[in-house]
Image 1 (spheres, helix red, strand yellow):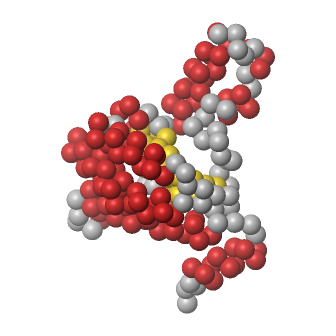
Image 2 (cartoon, rainbow, N blue to C red):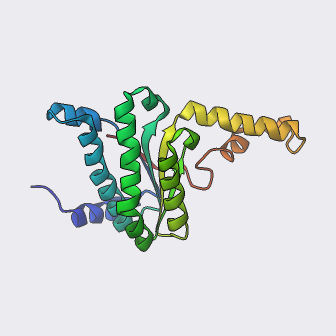
Image 3 (cartoon, rainbow, N blue to C red):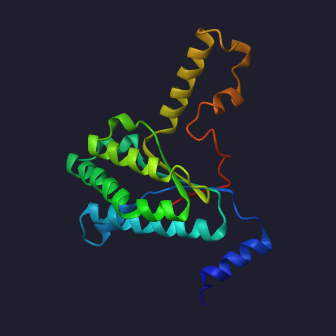
Length: 196
């Protein structure tokens, strides 16, 4: 017999604290579709439903930050038609979910090398970030065109520029200084990491 969402949430609250920050590596949508003899794009569309469920669950549980790793830099190696479908899906997500996210108090931030996105996808990112900026119920970080090594390299370049400009001493470059230049500097580290 499976527990309801309310029962599971009750167990979490009784046996421990609700995680403040949950990170989810969204993986396997394309393979899910292939196993069902569907186009890979159908798997990515099904992933939108999962995103909606994750956001809803986090709002109900009182999670403060949800970070979704949705599209890695390595994903740019996929076939052009799949990439185009993913960029179109991003635009559809903004159009379908943006107003509800705003109404629910969800502040959306897109993190990663966003310059690589198509012009229409960049416009969608700008729209949803601006429309949801006042939200305070949940910070929703969606990592697009993201790679952890690329993020660390970016932070190192920014730190090097601070040192070169004389605003930071070389001895001051430590883990805390590096953390200030990460995309998620404004939020606590994840308490729970899930790879689907």
